[in-house]
Image (cartoon, rainbow, N blue to C red; front, top):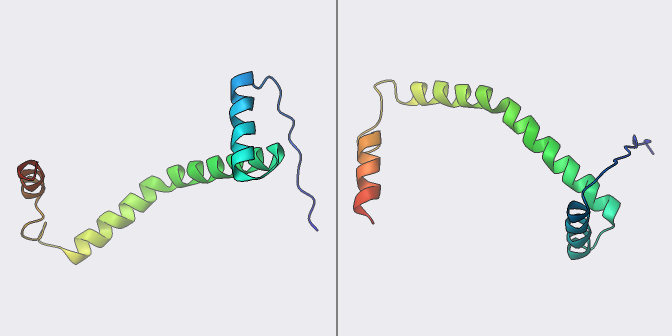
Length: 88
């Protein structure tokens, strides 16, 4: 079994700790497991945010390959906005 690193966290605000305790109880896990899950989820969000510019660039390239002439009929930004406004 691989040894996991330990982290010691100090000066956690009481309301934050209580929120984590409540979440742990709701999810049926220990406070430690809840904190680890929270840290893992936040780290994943940070990785995805850091990767966002590259993902957007890939999406733009794929869009240009699929629609070299621009937006297909009915998907022009003006048409989409108009349709959304008219549906209210």
